Length: 197
Length: 284
Image (tube, rainbow over all chains, first blue to last red; front, side, top):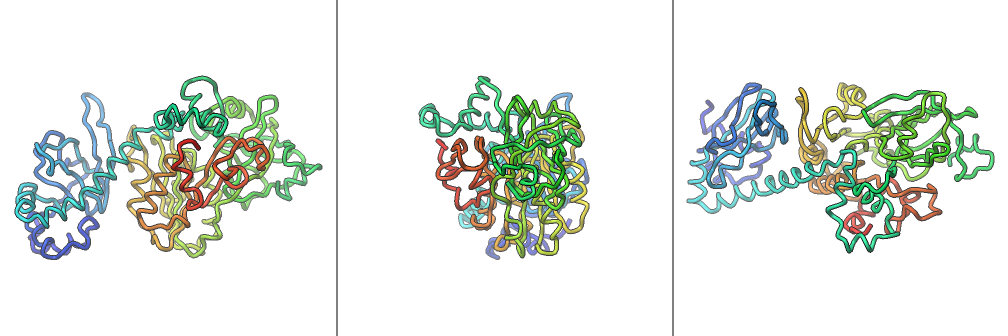
């Protein structure tokens, strides 16, 4: 375990906290620890108390969902410069996914109770941490939605187009955008048309 | 139609297909194949990266397909096609020795030379890697004219990765960065999982001196362009390849109209700042 007072520069260098005020950084450092995970180690499991979150310094982590008698479904992988775990901010503070080290992983972990206590006591710190977490959460949510669209599937574009177009928009587009109409027709199974590549 | 193609077209009419013979067919994925074509009358075929041809399966119909070969090799015309409809499935059924008609090349090109001196970031999704491949070839051939060259590629699953061996070869070079991600991991895949925009967010390029070429499904291109802008890349240095219902290929028929543009003539490669607003119009 690395002594907390040596972690300040590491926190400074990590993209997630880059540019943070030194006094706030010192508050964070008091809750931080340096950790290492071998390939296959679990950083956390779904249902665990969300006691920590991690700043990934090196390596790759798979965020995944366990399923009975089958390999886990990998939702996404994250790597250097990214964070793992935000359930520590949201009651009832339980992890909602598994996180597994795909390679050797070096990370900074932050004690959730320690950090929540400091954020409650110091709203400036609380705001700063939330301000940095929210864009990451928004990005991950947007990415998850894109992933759900199955854009590269056999009729990915059609699947994506169908729910987006309103009935009014479809009517207005008649004769003006035949490619979009064709994709909608494909989605409805009306006829088979080439889109090229 | 370029000068080389005119050699095979006595009337120089872009509406008349030139007969080509299929030399080789390679199965890339379960529904995707690459054909190598040579003009039946002999000669060469010149094109610019990003341009497309109208391929005519006799008695079936025509379909616009981007050229996916090396622009420096004029001896063979390469097309990678995904069989998704009547004509492309008819193309898929053709064998070496069979003939088809070719009109083209049509459309605008990836401005590879305009990106000299910059980092160059290719962002491809699915079969969208095919129209980008000629530009990657050209960039690699001029490697010393660029800063970093980064290829970011997103596929549906590991089994759907196009040009897998070529990606591995590029990744093996010391002067190219190739990152691949899949939407859904299967088998023993140990690489990235997630959408290609996640790879953009990781950066690795100088946003103030970066040009980016983006090709894939339109939704993917829209979000990729946004992710590039978020990293600081000016939208005037992002190019996208847009596809509509190309028919004539040369701006006569109007089938491929996209706002004020004909995608066959003004595109398919557009500078993003000139079309970003059109991406937001649902009716288009």
